[in-house]
Image 1 (spheres, helix red, strand yellow):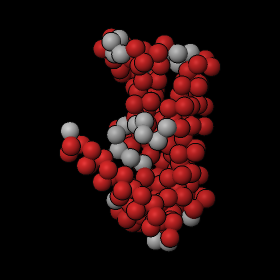
Image 2 (image 1 turned 180 degrees about the vertical axis):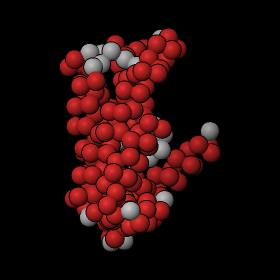
Image 3 (image 1 turned 90 degrees about the vertical axis):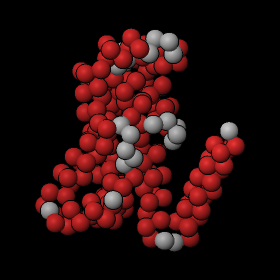
Image 4 (image 1 turned 45 degrees about the vertical axis):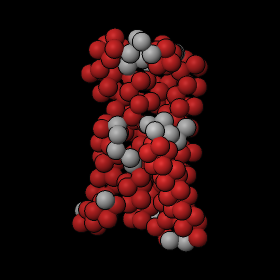
Length: 181
C-alpha cells in the first residue's frame, strides 16, 4: 500500500503534502484502517523528520475532522445504545481535566483503537478543543514509535529485523491463544 501512495506522491509532487493530509483525514474518518502505510510513505518520500511531522499533522487533522463528523451524526443515537457500559459512560460524561486525562491516557495506549477514542469522545460531553489538544499530545509518542519502527523496517537494519521478529512473535502468541479457546 505504501508503494502505491509513494507512486502517487511522485506523480503529483506539487500536491504530495495535500494528498498525505487528505489520506490521513479519510483514514481517521473510517476509524478502523491503520495509518502505518501513510506514515511509511511519508517517511520514505519526505524523509524521517519531515515525514513524521507531516504524519503527525495529518493524524491530528484527521482526528479533529472525524470528531466533528461523528459528533454531528452519531451523538444522540449512540449515547442511548451505550448506557449499559459503565466505563464507556464515564468517558461520555467526562469534562474538562478528567476528559483531557482520559483521552490522553487512551491515546498513549497502543492497543486502544484510535477510532474508538475519537468516536467515544465525539458522542460524549468533552469539548472539541479539549479533545484536539489531548488527542494530539497523546498521539505524539505513539507516532514517534511508529515512525521509528517503520523507518528501521524499511531500511532493513538490525533494529528493523528485531521489530519484525517481535511483531511476529506477538502475532503467533495471539494466534495460538485464540486457537486454544
